[in-house]
Image 1 (spheres, helix red, strand yellow):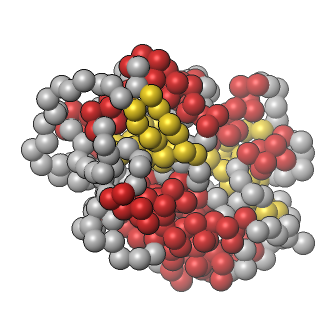
Image 2 (cartoon, helix red, strand yellow):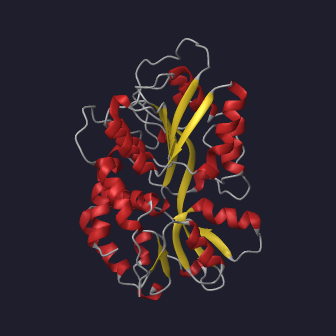
Length: 358
């Protein structure tokens, strides 16, 4: 029997709030992988004193970014207040707060939540030299947000019970009777929802709905998030989990003898690489310090933190990735991802997941 929980319903409400309502801002087209950005003539603002205080809405967990935020505060003298929550929930809060939001920066774990805020017209355009710090696929096409690190979807496997030869080439291949009772997933997790949104954009609603229904019929095990799937695989309780790559790498960094490993699929949305990112709110009362914080996320120390402590892909050229990471260019992430389209498909993804019985 499936292990059901309330996590998906909670995620549904968060995403619905984030996506519902017609904001007054223009609809924003997000950057595509390998596509040239249409940022326009945006130059670095004249230098202004970096002082005062800022409020950061962080969809990234405190354990992942608190050290970076503290280092920024220590180096600049800027007082920083942080509100932590899920990225989708914070995007919904920003949409509701609008121009009266106290937030100066929105730091998100995923581009879809950034796209929701951009669609509402709540971001200012970032300076071109900040946008140019990272690859074009990790930047909003209109310049409203910029990537800070990269995360790949992957499958965590228990190598004691399953071999690479048994693994499918793409995510649809998990719909196989041989995987009955062997799969784990977190249907309410934002990264899983983003993957489903990608699948809808790439393959259409009907195919995705059929896949979700089939997976639901394979006696899968439901988890509230990614890390428990890796822990279960490590303990011999799960053969295959659908996760983000870095959760597995954290376990391997602590115990090199762990039987778990990442399997990076050969292509499609199950292999998608997504940027975490940040933008400055147009309503910010301290834009110089807010911009300075985003620039700090591209600093050598911050990028090294993301790759060596969080095990994410650094986005700034010249930063050496942790040795546990594959070459990001070797991954077969879809090359034509449109973050704006994924943001628009987010609500439909939640709907299809619910209809499939998760």
